[in-house]
Structure formats: structure tokens, C-alpha cells
Length: 215
Image (cartoon, rainbow, N blue to C red; front, side, top):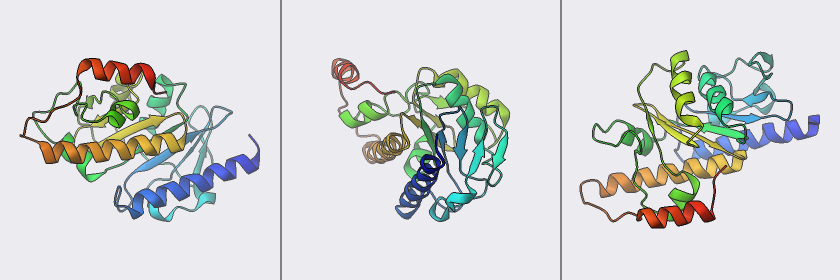
């Protein structure tokens, strides 16, 4: 990868991070973004960094073993990203947010831990699919990476209990779109909670997954 290409990715991380922050999908210094590089390493947002005010030059660059090469210290939740990448070699980017409605769903005691949000819309199925719940761990706990690794091979997105979503995509743009779709569907789910909404049938879900495969 040329320096020009890497700089373009750094700018894209900053631009999309600011978009997510400006629209209230993450707040303060919460949330983190990573992109896989052609050499097997990663660009990753730094620890305690606000996604709305990222400096492209200070984004962490890591090698394939997870060692910092340049930039600021990476997010303490890098273990989440590396666990997802280990299980999903086809994924090119990961977005982890503390988005309000998704976190709210993760706190509900009665959700199905194998599929936290029912298939309410076609685009949710196309971009997210089944969303399993990962049991609560303290942020940055290495065991959280192990818990995510056990699910990431079968799912492009997981929901961390009392924490938030982790979403992988073929590209950063795809991962952001899927994260936005997840947050909007979480909002719909909460609006419809207790009203016995009509979801898509298993046959309709199967047709969508066959015609629009995710990464």
C-alpha cells in the first residue's frame, strides 16, 4: 500500500468518525474504528480519542502482531477488533460504538442472546443479519476478545451486553452503513417493544440472505 493510499484511509476514518459523532451515534471519547491494511496490519483510532475530532496523522498504525508502529496508543478495545479480524479474513474494517439505542437493547433482560433484534426490515437483514449477545466484560478485558472470537466467524456483528455493537464490513464505508442500520433498527425495536410487531418470515429472510450476501 502506498503512503498516498494510507493517508486516504486515515482521512476517511476521520471524516466518517466525525459524521458518526456529529449525528449523536457516539459521544465523548467513546467508540473506535479500525481498517485492515494490505500488509496485514491495521489503522486504529487512539485510546481516549473523540471520533469527532480525530487527527489523521495521530491514528495508530499497528503491524499484523498488534504492535504499535506509529501514531498514538491504540484504543484499549483493540482486542475486540483483532478478535473479529482473526475470525473474519474477508472483513476490511470494524466499527465499535456506544450508540444509545443499541446499548439500550443490550441492557434488556428478555432479549434472545442468539439474536438480539428480530428481522424487522429488509435492510437490517441485508446489512446485519443475526445479532448475538456477548456476555458483559469490563472494557479492554482480554477475555472479551475470546468471547467475541467465538461468534465472529458466523456473524458480521455482535452486541456487547451493557456496552454496544461491534460491526465488521468489507470496507469502512460498508461497516459504517451496517452500524447505522443496526442503530436505526434498535430504535425501531424499542419503539415497537411490547406491541408484538410483524417481522419478516424465515422464508423472506432466507431470500434476502441468498440475494444479498454480507462479507
